[in-house]
Image (cartoon, rainbow, N blue to C red; front, side, top):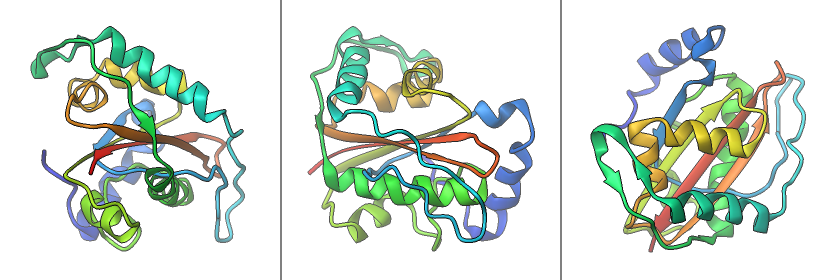
Length: 186
């Protein structure tokens, strides 16, 4: 998987998508997170309602148990259920809050770190890690459905090599939801 460009070029490209229908476009990378609050420096933002962890697990694991056609990435058979991971939730939450502040999607963190580095910094010693990003979907189920229609995102969601995950949300100043999925295996 190719990760995002450095801070010089990617932000302008991502911000260019913010006002278009591509806002519902999906982003891809690998990591995790938890709290649902949006920390916003100077911009108005709101918290996503905190869905029950068991609801998110049911949603994700239902998609995994069905398997699917990930297009160019091939057919994926049914996959084992994933466990929720609080460390991944914290990592994903930090990324979601930052993306909500900038109003764009990026697989590079606020300080320019890629997912693997963000995960290590957050205390997750991974052997395998992946991340999906989405913006504009009103509910987690919509984000998961959109990821299943994207070859790379579907491949991450149905990855047989991961064992645990987190799926978090933050809301931008323009009232758009940003979804961050991080899954991994230690």
